Picture 1 (cartoon, helix red, strand yellow):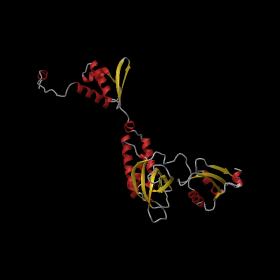
Picture 2 (cartoon, helix red, strand yellow):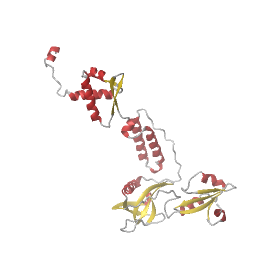
Picture 3 (cartoon, rainbow, N blue to C red):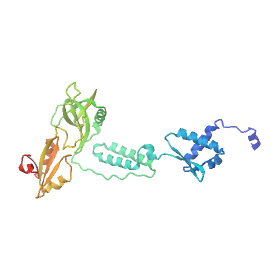
Length: 326
């Protein structure tokens, strides 16, 4: 077809051509060719009038909203435009460094995760890291665990999910529970507050309630793997069932109380290196031993901990002169 035929209208005109095409052409060019573009250069490239170019830029700016930023400026009296797209981190709401921290959290949680769940999390994190940076690699696993006994939480994950939802909604549940040393199961009306990981086991801490009541009766802690069923009751409580503001020694079995422990010199450094309760106090002695005062909500756990020192630590009476002179 000759140019004269084209001028006479012999060529088929694209039914979609028009102002929309011009907007799309210019927008795609700004996206695919990042950087500053002078108005005159854009007008020449697309065979637009400069006023048309300005009008199209205004249209683009009105419609991109928060998905991008259209910058305007002048350089040597020449007007330029620059379309700045958000980074991948801004789009996904997470950075590569944060993904690496998530990988660390995954590895710290490994003792409580079924192997297939841990592996699936790894695949998801690798895909996320790749989407943030095509060449990014997650660090190799650098955390290992040595335990004296493990619990398979795979069959208990449904109960865990029900409890997490109840904690978020402050929903009262019925627990069917078999306590340690007992053959019979017992039912409890329970307000769950928080899931706690301690010594390779998961616990749910909250408050037991009287039948028909929505008021806290007594603090209670249950081993997750010994809970047979969790049944939400569609009843709700308003108090804080977690009570996690103050860190005390052990799980919440009773009201906080102070305990005094003498620790011999051979075990003193181990005790000094750690925080046992928020308001603890350590008194060092000339022979290298120490006196530890801590706050606990579980005297039984304190006693078991003291026995683990094999005679190098002991609970003492706070009325002893050595403590009174602290």
